[in-house]
Image 1: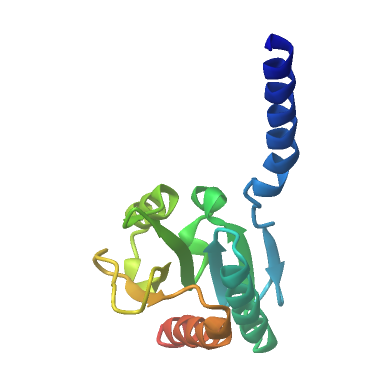
Image 2: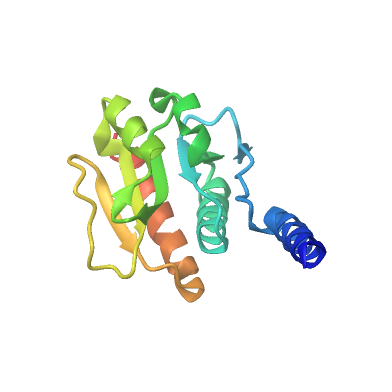
Length: 165
């Protein structure tokens, strides 16, 4: 009986260890698209999900095609970025228990020019809005068919923020 329990426990442990790497969070590789010397610079930070990755990369490609320098990074590395180097900052963050990611909150708190931040939250639907004062808030459900629309919205807002300065 004890041998069976040990065998079952060992098999369960092996199964968990085999599945665990597939469940681990991916991080977004920091990279710059477009001309890194361009005067028009945009930072897009997001946590990895297929929806946010598609929207962020499409927005970055749209902006880069118009001569912008776009830096993509993970929200976990957000505090390593200097907001003053960018004319627009797009933060794409999920809500966990209706609360914003702590890295995103800390970055917003340390950014003196909050009016250059576009905060994109992924929630159940577009009716919920972030209650962070001074930022342009957009809410979108993580529906893959909406990624193209969100990419154009992000690119348009970032472009408008930089062009109005």
